[in-house]
Length: 150
Image (tube, rainbow, N blue to C red; front, side, top):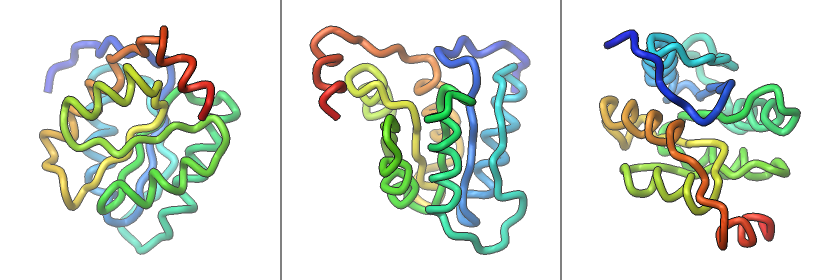
C-alpha cells in the first residue's frame, strides 16, 4: 500500500462493523490510515458476536451530530447495517457492491454512509469501493430536490 493521501470529499470518516465484518473493518481502517484519511473506529474491537444494529446506530448518530462527515459500515451482507443506519434522520446509507453502484449513490443520492458485505464482496473490491465512495462528489442539481424529499 502506498502512503499517498486520498483526496476525499469528507474531513472525518467513522467506521464500524459487526463480528462478520470485523476483519474487513480492520483492513479498510488500516488502508485509510495509510492514505492519511482521518478515521474514527467505533468498534467492535474483536470478533466476538455482537448485534449489528447497535453499531450501525452508534455510527449513524455520530454523523447526525456532525462528529464525522461520513461512515463505513460492514456486516455479512451490508444490508442489515444499512437498514439500521437509515432509521436515523439525515442518514443515507447505501449498500454498495460494484463501482457503478458506489459512484451513483454519491452522485445522485448524496449517500453519507457506505455499507459493505464482508461475506459477499472481495476484500480488494471493498477497498476500491471505499475509495470511490470517499472521492465522489454529489452532483446536486435535479438530485438535490429529490434528496430533500427523503
